[in-house]
Amino acid sequence: TAAPAGPVSRAIRAAPGARSVLRAANRAIPGPVKGRAFRAVRTLPEGVSRDQLARAAARIRAAAGHLGDDVVVQGSRAGHSARTGSDVDFGIRVPPERYAELVRECFDPGRNAEAMVNAVERGRIFWRRAGLKELHDGLRDDLGRKVDLAIIERGGLFDGEPWLRVR
Image 1: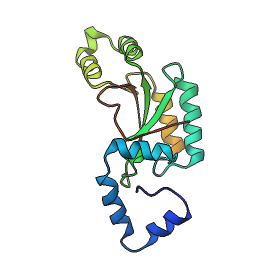
Image 2: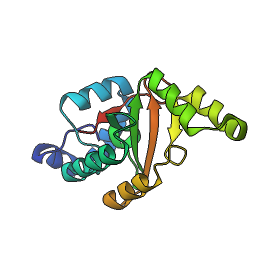
Image 3: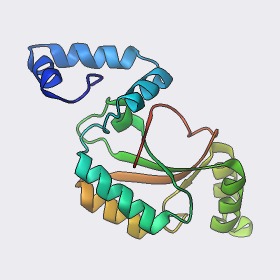
């Protein structure tokens, strides 16, 4: 929910009916507003502890630092609207020029033309295509839940709010 973590927010959320009211309020806040506000107060992704996030950051930088250093959590965990089985969406944001290089490295136009066009149009290269299976599986095991991991083109379709920086 939109309330930051801490004893006061836990007390508010414990009140009867408060969770549904907070979730409704959270859904009403536009993504860009929510993202900026959550980043300003350094909110953690929903359901991820500070230690888990630090371990994930270290793992991502060790295994994929050569791709880019702007690592974020996106989607429902960043927006505090996750459901019970929601995954944690990690993105490695890269500038358009770097993204074009990575598309050329990750795709063989003769064999993967459709997938390549999709990646160019949407601004997202999935972890499997980028050769990040070991990293993906390690993050999943560390966090104990489903994980998605992608290279995201800054300014592309999937570079949307809300997102939280992984430090």
